[in-house]
Image (cartoon, rainbow, N blue to C red; front, side, top):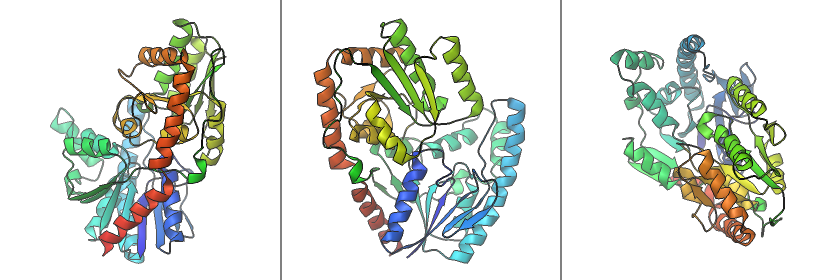
Length: 399
């Protein structure tokens, strides 16, 4: 069986956890005897590169500026890159002749490579791990004037989202699948296959139990962006210090993002005298971050609106952290509130701070929740179970 995986990013040049999962699945499918080729962008290297089964030849269309004028220039560049991606994809698909194209993510290479595959009548399977398709559709058709709709349609070569046939889909969570139904993205065949992590990462019990008087060490892992709630995490710590009087407290952020946005956050930290409590670490690869979890008490996961089935939450629970997350789609697919984690709403700094403060007064409850979290991950979120389900569905489609 020959599979072509289409993804906008692929390790080591990644944006988030989704690309790491893509690599793990690619390697395991190869290990199981399948021929797998990855078609991805040249993000992070700036030039085309073919290394074994990895084709880094698509143009990355990422990087819109906060400056309106510069944003327009970048959007025009994105259009030409998208058109180029269409022709590149067609050429490679004709050359490889795959049985199936597994579309992992296409946000930063645009919809045109997907349409190139479907124009060639090659079967496609979509992996949907986030709300990016919904957001891209809203960017075009959610505008309040026909001029804006025309402009945004032009940015994908005057093709339409309705041309994309989303018939076979793997959703990583039930809530994510429901959100797509509500948004009118129909499909005739889909599976919900939850993310999993390597079995050896799952502990038998928490390594450290928090007791009153211990330092409170908060952890944030993920892209540094407003969409992920990085600012909420920082302001939560500020509320805990100023309103609840917790001074032996810190917040460490692991991740990268838009330079302009990150500089704004760092300026906020400096201007509000939070520098001694907050540390920005940049990106750490997955093998290194998994060992960092042991240094922290609490994972704060404050995504304000859209979130898939977060691997970060799964990892943190498996490593014995007390997880406090937004009460939205993906986290709700993982956490049973009050049993193996805490879900917060409304999603604002004051509510996160209040929740943390209340639980810190009850270390025994925190320990109970952490132990339940490890059990939940062990029973439901193992990589071995996930890859079995992926392979089964792929084989069904090819047959």
